[in-house]
Picture 1: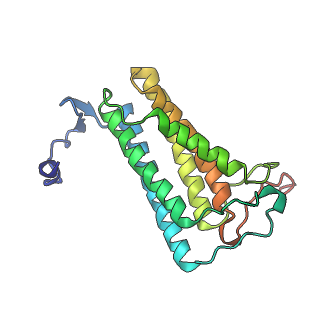
Picture 2: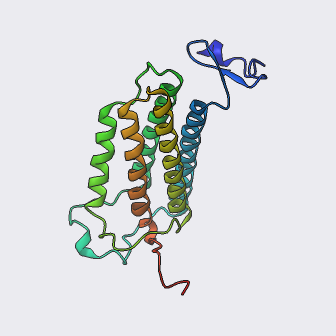
Picture 3: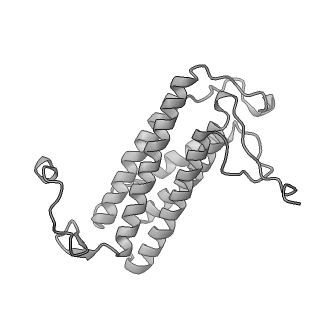
Length: 212
């Protein structure tokens, strides 16, 4: 790997093509590279989210339970998640997304496991059990961390659409990977609800009467 990364530019892509793992050349405008690029962009957005979480943690070290969350929605033995726990989960996701990019570059490679989907589902269920029921639509707004989670969620949906389109064309995207990217967008939605409650924050709800 060190030799491969020692030279940054190769000029081999100047004709608008790029190399696949099997040595073939494919147009940079190909749908497969759209999907790979969107996964890379999603990964970068999650990296930015981690940076915001770190910044938020350093500026507001003492996290309090917000008073707008009703007590009956919080289990008595529930430990409120903190920034470090979120960062560890997001770091793991970044590595998993890098594996997913590897699958797209090498369709015979399998880097996303069924257990990753189960992990996301279990975490969604755990978080949801301590959140108030969702009675209104949530706007992608709030503090900078919450807003960044929503941005990552939107890119995740974009990535899913491209993976579905790619699989419709080539029929070689893993079903587990399709499940993973679908579940990840749900995970990010619930994460936005959770982090909105850090540091006495709150969700921004859609009000149908705002424009009337």
